[in-house]
Amino acid sequence: MPTPALAGGASSPVRSGWAVGGVPFVQARGSGPYAFDAEGRRYVDYVMAYGPLLFGHGHPAFTTGLDELASRGAVTGSTHPDELVLAERIRGHLPAMQRLRFTTTGSEAVQGAIRVARAYTGRDAVLKFGGNYHGHFDLALQDAGASAHTDRPQQSGIPASITRDLAVARYNDVADVDAQLAKLGDRLAVICVEPIVGNMGLVQPEPGFLAGLRERADERGALLLFDEVITWLRLGLGGAQARVGVVPDLVTVGKILGGGFPIAAFGGRADVMSVLAPDGPCFTGGTHAGNPFAVAMGLRVLDWLESHPEAYARMNAHASELAAGIRAIFARRNLPFAVTQLESIVDFKFRAGPPNRNYDDARAADKALYARYYHAMRGRAVLLPPSQNEVMFLSTEHDAVDVAETLAAIDATFAELDLRM
Ligand code: PMP
Image (cartoon, rainbow, N blue to C red):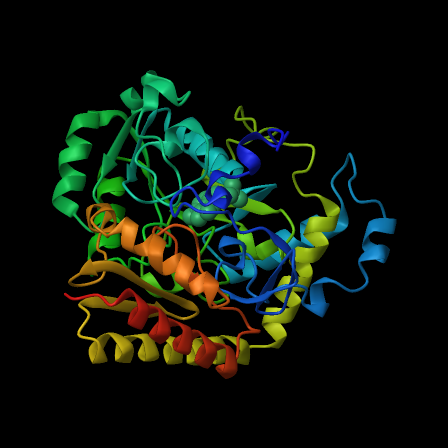
């Protein structure tokens, strides 16, 4: 076989399956909750493209009438009317985004938000959390969760200098936040956090943690950024911020917003966002920022969710069934793994004890065992994320039959693994 022209055989390393070994999964097509490989074999899909596919693959609301959208012109060199409408509608659901700007990816959204925070505060330093993932730009990759592997920063193309303006704290650990903030002195521009984390397994903030971040940002005249690229729309139209009782200064969203097409946004307090050019000196932009085709898909996503409020309860019910079923299997087999579920997110790790609280917990999970589990499940036609830092995502299209099939596969897989704990 000649070496493929596609570097590493994948456009994003997680897809190479490097965390689980073996032959990478290649998806030829998708339909509803199912992924199909090149041989036409059907898998119940819990990757869901790492989050965007809240409606499953190929949902008619996002696959019909696309010629008409494309025929208006897929991209323009100017602002267009839909873009203004979509921004208003996002603000209607996320009042913390008083002003917002579109980008193409979540990475760009977070990068833009951090630049705005630096411009607004006139300071450089960022506090982030181990095991949170904010994209693939330099500072975000320090101790990042998800499928980022940058253990050797000197060789990974990330300048050593970025660590001068960066501190990484342990999630759910206010004492560690204080210790890290002390190192930054009066240079803190922004605290950047996933308010509910989906990149080191599913990790929920403990009571007082996010309020503690709010307080510390305020004390220092710094800003608080909630990265809701996974959680907005996954956890409802109000996102994580509607649940946690803490109001951020800056917010990033993406993934589900595009209905499978690439669009993301960052925004926040009007006074903070006013540093952006042309009003202020801080530049962000992009050829495809606010791409009309992707914006039209964003409007469809909001149309669909606003007119189907029952969809969340249905997803939640299927996800609860799945979580309860896995718990029952573990109880019957005397396995010490904790199962967590929040709305359409389901997760467990191969580590005895309570659910992950932070990245240390996530790193302590048994990776070799997960790799065996992943491949055994794939053999039983269930597609899981090929990394234990990721979570299982359900969609509006997963139903009780899919859940039952999945539980049967999990049961058979644990019988085969024959774990004695
Ligand atoms: N923030 C979070 C919380 C994410 O989960 C991700 C992607 N997994 C990103 C930012 C980056 O988004 P993108 O991959 O679209 O650049």
